[in-house]
Image (cartoon, rainbow, N blue to C red; front, side, top):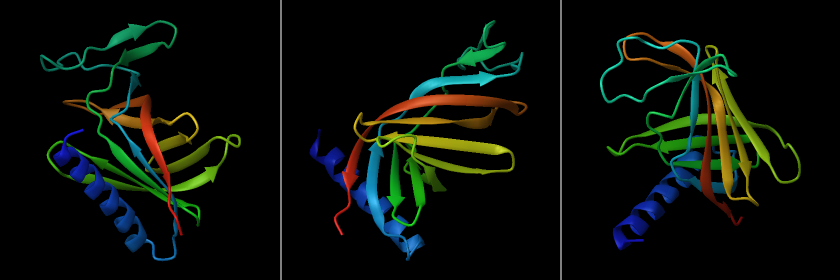
Length: 167
């Protein structure tokens, strides 16, 4: 890893940790997770016939009875899990901007997984962290479209680094 990339990764992790701590003063971080850009599938009920050239093609999958495509663009993320049951996901784009999503812990699937959720206005995002396997699974609903919004489901996987925060 180049020195600049290491400094940027450290600065981003520090920012996410401090941002999560400042936003929720009563929240005490228990884990910081740094994830690479996830890959996976989008599943839509319909497609737009006038998609721009160079866009990701969608193919009808008869078993899913829906159109399936690869994701258009995903970004790396830092997830801060707090002891009070809250969490935040900070996604970073190539142009230097970021998007913070507040989440909450809904439980564990087993002793090796933590599930987080957020959602409003009919959209739901579920994030399951697997620390022992160093992966995260992102699933949920979204809307895609160039000229109209088409409801879509998605499922992505990402390789991650998990760090326990020392109190």
